[in-house]
Image 1 (spheres, one colour):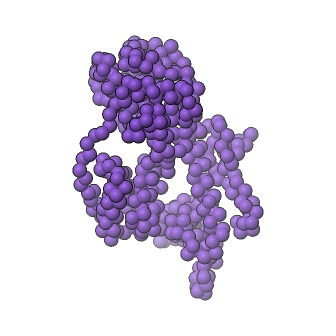
Image 2 (cartoon, rainbow, N blue to C red):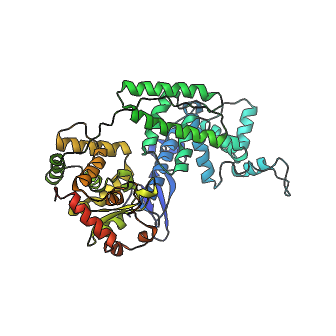
Image 3 (tube, one colour):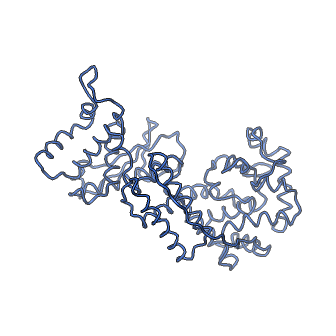
Length: 450
């Protein structure tokens, strides 16, 4: 596995740990020299470890802020909740752990509060401070949040709109680099990230949604884009409504449909793009995305989910291809024959997969668009134009619709990728009649670029 900053692997253990020294100036405040956080094991994939490292870095930054915050009012409610759950994690406990217990003592004479005291003994001192009407420190407030989270399921639930994202992201198995995160954070600017969740929040949310739409229109964002952004925002809010039983009635404003201005690249523009990639110091990972877009309408999000080792093995077969096992729908499962710039792909595919997994979707899009626009001189081009380009090239070559569907992932029943074929090894799939036939089709589709 590629070395990740601050991640330490012990020779005789499988566990990986994020370890980072606190600045000397605050080590006396933290009470220790080094921050540590588990980030999986050596058997985990690079991408899975990166996701945990991202969490570890957030926890480290929060611990720095807490150490330097004398007054808890300097911290947001979400930050205090996160710090409390981190305290429970270090004590090998979980939020809501004793919330299901009744209020009666058990056979040992202990109730849920007694068990919580065993895990958070500092709570006794916090109670004494509260009785003496003394001001609580930041750490005292964190202790109280942790104790409440142990015994009260309601205290463990998110209290603000900003905190909903993590629960939604865990449910959807996405992270902060996903476009949904960027859109939701932009929306919070209209409603306030510390807006407390309640049934009364409904009117505030609908007003914020309308404000979001108007602001995006001022920014000259197309209605179709605004609509997609609203879908992501409403998905987070509706998840919270269903999960926590909040009777929100959220309304998506009606937007006029924009005319589709996306067009296929001309043959001359396609040649210009390939020439530009070959002859210039371009962003190599973005160039890989462009080549896969052009040859099979492959989205960067599809590249993100693929295994580097399997891709490299498939690209070195007699009939090189990229295998997409799953997508938004079953029809997106497909084989993309590689007939253009195979050597370039082999050289840069590892970097491309790591890049799309490590940066935001917005960054990927910007770099792809920049490459296309620089190569052609047309400032309206985007990566998605290449998906239209693949289909236009295929139609112009007169190939069968079933082959177009099998390569590009559009609906098509005659020539799909069966479950049986997915069990083939790389060599077997490459030598199959299906892949040989699709490779010949792809050569015909791209003959003007070969």
